[in-house]
Image (tube, rainbow, N blue to C red; front, side, top):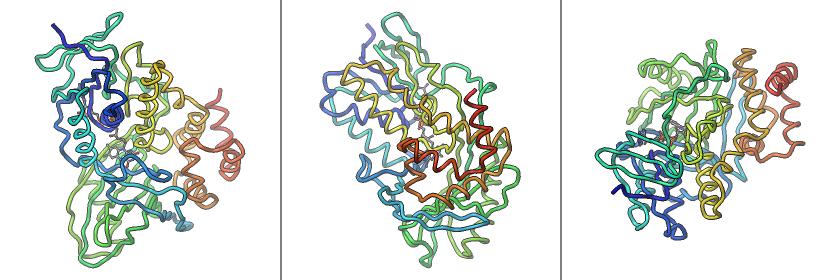
Length: 380
Ligand SMILES: Cc1cc2nc3c(=O)[nH]c(=O)nc-3n(C[C@H](O)[C@H](O)[C@H](O)COP(=O)(O)OP(=O)(O)OC[C@H]3O[C@@H](n4cnc5c(N)ncnc54)[C@H](O)[C@@H]3O)c2cc1C
């Protein structure tokens, strides 16, 4: 007989494990939950940074936390206080370890190291096959696509990046200050910037992010990072201890249309990536909270996707329109944004926590014509 679970979480990445971590709380002990993922999730395969007010669920495993936010562009540089936010940074392995330990310590969640290979939705349950095992579940929450994504009717650009963890013999960094965006580099025909996240006075992650669909090979990012270090950080001596590369979709594609009555998508394929910035981690954590709340209150899971479809989506679409359809310079736009607004104002705007008055203030200082054109085109 197939084993039955109330929820199967397929995919133990940021989306799946942050949800499992919330559901490992004793208030959910009446549920039977299964996690499936064939990847051992035992590596530092990514670094997540995000801003947050006050204490957070993952503070015990932070790699670092910054109170200062540095912005650079060709026209100006500005060091800002993040307060009341802190800019936080964690690496994936401590996150996977923490969540997996919480799951292992509770009796109501099973973890099976197999990929889901077959998913079939019946009227009142979902059949899932993984390895040689077959399961049924009331609801499947998965972090990978099972259908073709056709982005052709959407605004779409990849944010791709490459970074080096670096160690220096001499103290080179202020561990309280994150270089959030540095646009001083040559922009080619796209939007590109560096960020520098120190871990100590001697160690930092130096990473380039590029908005374009022309994904580079690792060695091409490496050349750009090497040049940036010599031109802007002025070090001659350093060791590269680790490297990371990745791609994130920035799009207004309605990922939630792939959700069904019983199968819901999490993380990137649940629409958690902010279309205008590529930030996803804090949205993933908040989605995990909303799902846990919906489960505890017996509310439909579909309701947890509503915030992705708010007026902030229209703002994201406006920026993507300006960058992709009107081909305006991202460096100029972000420079303008950081010249007229402090880091906390920008963080709360990107989080969707602003009032209409605050939003009008932010937009009124942007280049008017392109933003009005983009706004009304995306509205219509
Ligand atoms: C290198 C990198 C750095 C990033 N940095 C940031 C950042 O600093 N800040 C930020 O906000 N966002 C960042 N992001 C974006 C986003 O936060 C991450 O991509 C995040 O990991 C997305 O979570 P996810 O659960 O959707 O996907 P993932 O974390 O990739 O997890 C998907 C999981 O699904 C599993 N899986 C796949 N197929 C199956 C199957 N058939 N059955 C079972 N399991 C399956 C995979 O093994 C994987 O474990 C970054 C992304 C990358 C790639």
